[in-house]
Amino acid sequence: MTAHPQTKGDGLITYSVDGDVALIGLNRPDKRNALSDRFVIALGAAVARATAEARAAVLHGHGTHFCAGLDLAEHSEKPLFEAVKGSRLWHRTFETIEMGEIPFVCAITGAAVGGGFELAASSHIRVAEETAFFALPEGTRGIFVGGGGSVRISRLIGSARMGDMMLTGRSVSATDMERWGGVSYVVPAGTALERATEIAHRMAQNAEFTNYAILNALPRIADMSADSGLFTEAMVASLATMTPEAKQRLKDFLEKRSPKVQAPDAH
Image (cartoon, rainbow, N blue to C red; front, side, top):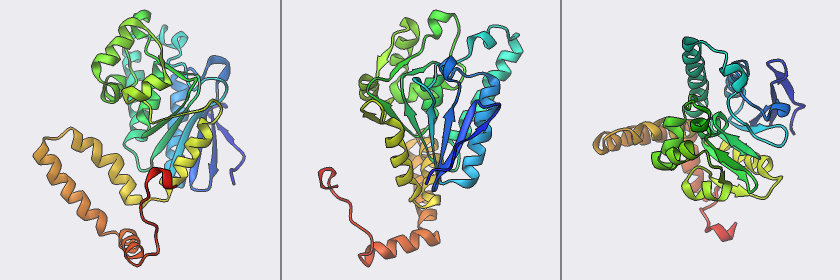
C-alpha cells in the first residue's frame, strides 16, 4: 500500500513509499516542474531518504509535464562562479541517482526538456508516455547543458544526435527517442507512473548486491579497455556469487523452487 505522500523542500518534492519502492514527485506543476537549485537540493534529500529505506525508486512529475528543465529566471541572475557551483550541485545530486545503491525508474509525461532530460538520463530505466517529448533548447537560449547531459545523454543517444537537438532546438517524440536509445519503454498516455512503479517493484526483488553491481560496475566497465573490463567483470561476478542471498537464490533455482525464464509472449 502506498503511504500518503509527504512534501519536502517547501512542497517542491513529494515523497511516499509503496512497499519497497519510494515514489519521488517533482511538485511545481505551475512552472512545468522547472528546476532551481533549491529544488535540486530538495530532490537530493529525497533521493538520500529513498536510498536509506527503499530497494528501488520512481521519479515522476506532478501535473502535465515531467520537467521543463532549468529555471531560467534563477539562472539568468547568477554570477559566473555561482553558475559553476550550481552546475556542480546538479552533478553531485544526479550522480547519487545514477551511481547510487538502488535503481531508479523515471516516469516521463509531457515535456522532458533540457535539465529535465538530464535528470531522466541519470535514472536507470525511462518509461515515457507516447505523448511525451524531449528537447535540448540550450543552443537557442545561448547557454549549454549543465546537469550532466553532455556525458549521460550523449552516451544514451550519441553525441551527433544530442548535438542535433541542441543546435536545432527541435523536439523529439517518445517513439523516436526509444528508437535512439534514450527511452526504455513507450506506454499509452496516463500509464507511465503505473508502469514505472511495476518495473521498480520487479527490480526491488533482485538481490541488493546484484543491483548495486549493475548500477556501479557496468558504467565503469564501459569506460575501461576490453582487457580491464573483462578482469573487473570476473571480480564482480565472483563477489556476487559469494553473498548469502545469491547462494540461496541459486539453491532455490536448482531445486526448482524458482521459475525459469520464459519467452516474452509466455508471460
